[in-house]
Image (cartoon, rainbow, N blue to C red):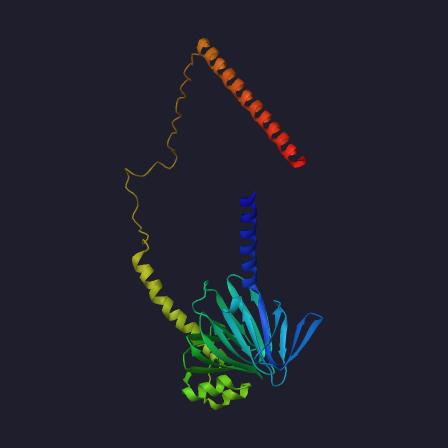
Length: 325
């Protein structure tokens, strides 16, 4: 009984810790924010950054931060943290075992994904113009007015266009890129350390204005070049496969007379002869011996069942006596 109780407790603790790891929390350091899920809305106000107000965040619940607001979203026990700034709209769309999917159509935030987390799941942020994909990194992103700007603080980030997801750039540490509607992401540009700090600490997307981004290519032109590059990569592979597996060219030579079959004759099918089954002789004396053995086994089983039933009844009487005492 004690062992079963302990196993039950351990099972509940394991399930509880797994569920807790999947929970999301939002901490309001200062300012105001609104949490909305369908018609239901919650309003929070707090001004003590040293003792932030923490509430549970549901998947699909949208966060809207007010003016002069700082809030922090913690996912998966702190393995994924997002620091939201003023005027942001943010939603956790998916928090499954395989991936984390977020959306921020407008606003500014700093994202930190622990590269040493237990599961190397996907992490994706979507804006109105861009798709940001990471594995383990830290970056700052600003979105709004048909454009998305992004600065990588550690690791590497891929930014792709929503219009053509195949058109993307890799933005390494200390680099920034910008994506505008109808354009491909700009080539990554290096950002000096002092500007990285001002961008990361700025309260709005205007902090990215200190970066001089290079001109961007039209999205249609970039998509066409991407397709041509893929075709160029596949051609050598196809040529190599054709060289390894050359096709046999058909020949006009007629088959030899010895090998050719007459047109009107078909090869005869030989019908195999079926052998008669061998007769099996049964010794009646051996059957009697087997029947005796089966009866002995049956009697032994019945005796064992009766003894077990008597022991169970005796145990039940003993338990009742102990309870009455």
